[in-house]
Length: 88
Ligand SMILES: C=C(O[C@@H]1C=C(C(=O)O)C=C[C@H]1O)C(=O)O
Image (tube, rainbow, N blue to C red; front, top):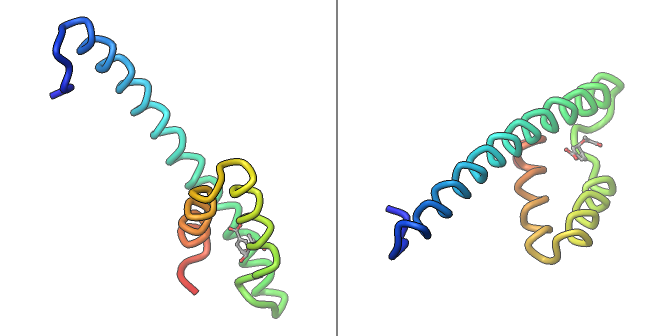
């Protein structure tokens, strides 16, 4: 199941996978929290007569992730934006 060839390696992998699962739970929680904050902003803008989406702000968010994580950061940010404001 771990792909390891020794019991020692299997132990390392099992322990590290537990940490990854815990990190993924935190990441998912942060994404849900981000979506809730994003919804507050979108609702405020729509209530004031504006549009749900603000593309110039989205460019800033994409740039932030690209600077931190490189090209895949842009892909990640695009997925995050879709999770937070739906498809456009
Ligand atoms: C949250 C906002 O509204 C929308 C959602 C964004 C986001 O989730 O980061 C960014 C820009 C907008 O399309 C915002 O304008 O900041």
